[in-house]
Length: 114
Image: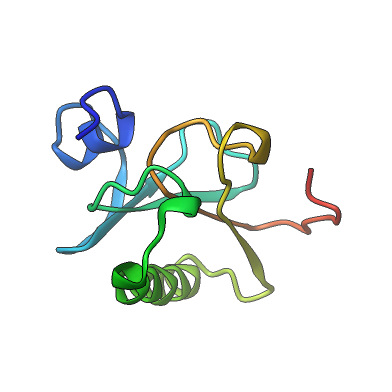
């Protein structure tokens, strides 16, 4: 278990976050450095360091994250569309060693993204 993982500390309520959703499998909170008017980080409570480490046993958890993301998008009024982003490892833009999904919306999002 990674004791220096900031997301794990948020899950354990050791550091504050503006949590907007939580259940037994995941939680979602507003990003402290938003890249869009709506920028929510959705994390599983199970520590999976990178997307490369997802296994067959995680498929229900990942499906749950997508269902929660869609529900949050609706609740947050992202009716014109939104983007889901999962970064993998340093060159993919991942800065926290805990799988997470960014829900971005509230403005037009260009392509390519990075």
